Image (cartoon, rainbow, N blue to C red):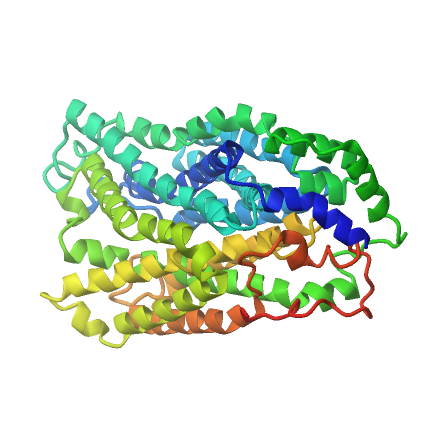
Length: 543
């Protein structure tokens, strides 16, 4: 059959031994994710400093802080941009090709990283409005990197180690978070030593040196460096052979590209035959909104979108109780007892330790085990353990917050992060790049990722209000009373449990080719809905 001949040609990629080009693709795509994570997470390091610089009131007993609406805008506008970029560039990657769009997203990230650091204005509101404007477009570029990096890596990889390669790209996010903390530590330390300042309680005016305005700008601008360094290599990457052959229908070019990448001869006659065979049925391929897509992949898309949505609600809400941990164990004293740059240093150090101990290891456990254990099992166990540890934090919450029990709280908190990363935070990124047809792969990944980012917005900002103390007198300044941290943890445990259940809608892709998962090797991707799928094709639980 046509599809079988097509699969034989693409089989060269599936069975290829791990070669240098695999590692090159991981580095090129991974540095994009390194930059993505750095840019998205570094803003949380400098928000306290921004509050001191632009919102300190003369005579106030405490340093200035960003008002709730301004803080939500500064931290959240990039998420909104990311969500938009995931949908737009995901769609564009299927229309124009992965390579052409890949360079656009990176250049947008470089320009907006620099521009956000150069935010200008004569008033605090104008400076932060400019910052938010460029942070939105920075997020827009970052959003495009999600579907494109995952899709490119999945289409380059062999089927034996595909999961590990995509996971390695995503794992660079952990190093990006780590780099953000390290850069903030280095810059704040350098400025502290050069421009020493007393604590706010000792000298409110002197605790904030004028040079502090350069610090947050340097930290934000640094994100442009790794992105800029990889731009040249992105422009030199050939278009993926799967896009060229299956979507652009240029089999001759696909054969030429594969010959260079795999360093083996693929004859033009085979490519011509594949091109002719692929169109022999004369039927129009089904689209995203067709009944056939719904019947073949509707539940799969529902599964990837909902699990990513539920995971990010829980994952991004974990910053709700970071301040309790940091304060309880003495990592971060009260703001009035520190200078502005000392506070930045303490926050960066705490975030770096969390990333080093809880975030980075989980990513690399996934890299090492995903092609052994499988996506389904890692995601299922991850959601289960996150549920268990969230309940372990919530049920005896008052016990954990009493003096002498904070170490146990930190351990439980660290395990929650670990099983998020050695679990659904990695697999929700990997699976959507493996189970959909080539012509819709980037679009479907973008939809799934955008669902996740919507969950991140809810987790970061909805729960920020929801987790406030029910007693109005004890709620954070500027926030209305909520349901409290303990009840919020119960809700988050429920989100994790729902994620576990929706995981059963997602098929296992370990050891299978992309065409086998998407159904493109059935009959040249021109089968009608009435024709039966191969045995086990629609199974959502690993066999």
